[in-house]
Image 1: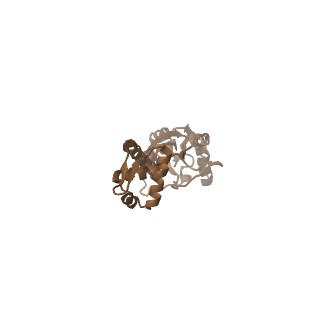
Image 2: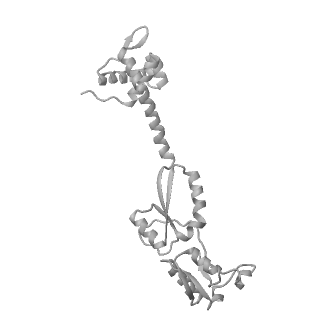
Image 3: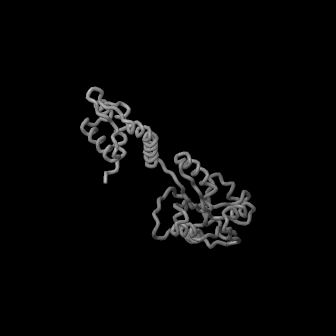
Length: 247
């Protein structure tokens, strides 16, 4: 059984068919004339067809089968070139889908800017988002429901590869009418709020983190309200229902 022809043999044939001259074709292809002649002979053997008539004075002349074959492979070679360029593009640019988990309180503050920058740099990637608390995000990562997640490193278990993007300090949120709101330096010690009512962001891992901060400051919080929604906490603080400790 004849050996199947190769893409290289087809490319060599196309150039020889165009020039009908072995020496000129070898120079264009940057190969030796003997290598080019051997390649064409192997191609003819694979096809069981004579593609050229060898002439002593005029070099090569296409047979009827050769002319038809040259016409037939033109589109094929163009598609092969297109496939090659597409494959090269895959190596230099990202394409496909990316599912991103995001800690819900972070989403309104950071996500729009991050997405805008990412889409500019990687237009071939279709991004979708999943908002959740820290515990749900860890579970989603382990189940493969999202590819990566933007979150705090609180309670991060084993089995995750993580990278610290930014260190975010905690802050106290008070209403506009609270005495601390008028301070020029906008600084306050948590101890100063000891005994005042507080509104707590009650999410897995977050609640433990805030409890550690209270304990470190020697403060026993007077919890008036607990909410799982970041914006709900902010709204209650704005109406004077207590202060909140947030990131």
